[in-house]
Amino acid sequence: MAQIRDVSKLAGVSPATVSRAFSDPGKLSAGTLKKVLAAAEELNYKPSSLAQLFRVKRTNTVLVMVPDIANVLFARVVSGIERIAADNGYNLLVIDTKDNKDVESAGIEMVETYRADGVIQLGERALRWLHRDAEKCTIPFVHAIGTGLDEAYPTVTINNQAAAESMANYLLSLGHRKIGVLAGIKGRLVTQHRLDGFRAAMNAFGVTLDEGLVEYGAYSLSGGAQSAQRLLSRRRDATALLAMSDEIAIGAIRTAQDLGLRLPEDLSITGFDNIEFGKYCEPPLTTVMQPAERIGEVAMTLMCGVLRDELQGEIHPLLPTELVIRKSVCRVEEPA
View 1 (spheres, rainbow, N blue to C red):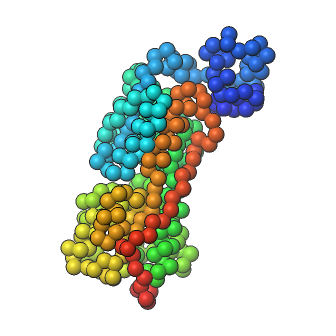
View 2: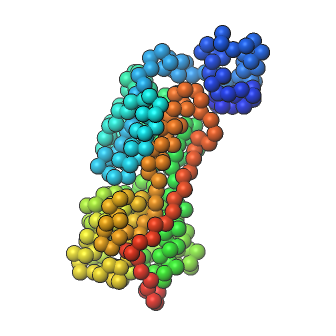
């Protein structure tokens, strides 16, 4: 389906000019209007009637759906969203969905009934899982931290597989082979993508993943503590734990210390996200930096583009990550 940016490119005008051609054509010259309409006809572009209604029934409020408001990563993303919203005159309505599909579907309905102008989704569920007729749904929707890059609407995320692979490569380069994985919630796309990255790194080193060293659990401090307890109770031969989030890693650190293990001499632990608390662990946490605030800023910038019919450029940006090396990992002299 053609979008406004396709028409603007073919007509050689800005997306805003295309928008005016359908909302207020009297403001355009006859020549410009003719070019836009010709391009629209060639591409079979039809402006969203719902978007036109939004111009009349605008609330200047964007709904942000957060699966766990207590999670530090999500709080940082919301902080980035808030900055750009304030700069552009939008209010935010933030709801903690507790990862409940029904609550998220109700959020979509809020936009359809003009109680909000658009939705930024921080949970994993794509629009097609939340709307009864997603293919025809034209509400402004941006997915932040989502993993789907083939959606028609904007998304912003990181390359989870590559980021996890880089951390696994770091552990492997230091001689670790018996690496336990605290993998987060089983069945989640983000969990699967990070596991894929870990497996790719292992394969490159000629090491087969031992499924007995993989443990699933909640993306939380308690989830990490419990996952580490289960894994270490059956596999004390692990020389390192690769955690899928910093909160999981911090919970694992507590469990390992309660078990009398020296960190990192007896057990190295890594995280993912680079939340502030990781700096103050003992030992300070080696992790993957995920640019949470920047994800929020980009998500809200994309939403502004959607709401103003001025969406331009890449609509599925992948933001960069980097390893943050601290003191929670050490070299093992002989592969375990």
